[in-house]
Length: 313
Image 1 (cartoon, rainbow, N blue to C red):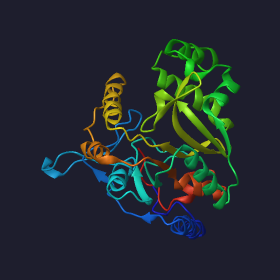
Image 2: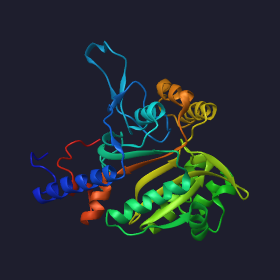
Image 3: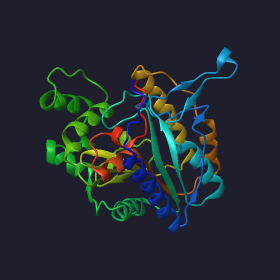
C-alpha cells in the first residue's frame, strides 16, 4: 500500500468543480439539500445488496449498518415535508473493489414529489444534457432484450431463462431464480450495448421499490436505468407508495435472502411507518457520482477520480 493519494491534484480540482456544478443545478430548480446519517439500525433489504456491519466495543449497542443508499432517510423526510430534496451522500457496499466500483462511494440521490414516470425520464435526460453528456436515447428493457436474444423477457419462465443462459453464455450454468437469470442475461448481452441510453420498464421481478403496472400483456415495473459506455450510472423509480405492497416487498426480500443463502437483515420499521403515514406519489433517482465524474473526465478507472482507494474488500 502506498501513502500517496490516488487522484492527481488536477483531478481533485476538477471534481470539486463538478460537485459545485451539480449543487448549482439543484439549487436552480429549488431543491433543498439535506444531510442524512450514513449508519442505521436496518440496511436495505434488497437481496442483491450486501451491507457492512458496524459493532461497538464490548457489544454495548446492537449491530448497526453502513447504508448502501440514503433512500430510507430521504423517504422519511419526504413523507413529513413533501418537498423536493437531494443529497450528496457517502454510501457503502460490501463488494470487492473493481475498475468501476469502490466499497465507499459518493451517491447523488434526489426525490421529486407529485411527479410520475414520464417526469422521471425527462429529469434524467435534462440532467444528462445540462451536465454535458447530451440527450440520452430511450429504449424499453423488452426491446433491448429482444434485439439481443429474440425473446420477450417479461414472458419468460425460470426454466426458459436458465436454458437461455446455457445456450448463450455458459453451458455449465446451474439453475438460478428468474431474477438472477434475467440479471445475468441482461448484464452480459445487453448492458455493453448501452451508451447514453435510458432503459425503461424493467421486469416486475426487479421492481425493488418501484411501482408495477400492466403494459399490453406484460407485467413491468416503472424503473429506469441510465447507462454511459456500458456502465450503469443512475437508477430511478416511480416510487412505491402503497403500505401493504411495501410490507409485502420487504417480506419477499427476506425470503429471497434465505433462498440465496445470504444473511437476513433487520426490517426497516421506520421506513414502513413513513409509508404508512403517507408517502406522496414521487419519483426518486440514485446516481453514482464517481462513475459520472470518470465519464466526464475520460478516466478508465474510478481510482483516477478518487482521492484515496486504500480499502480493498
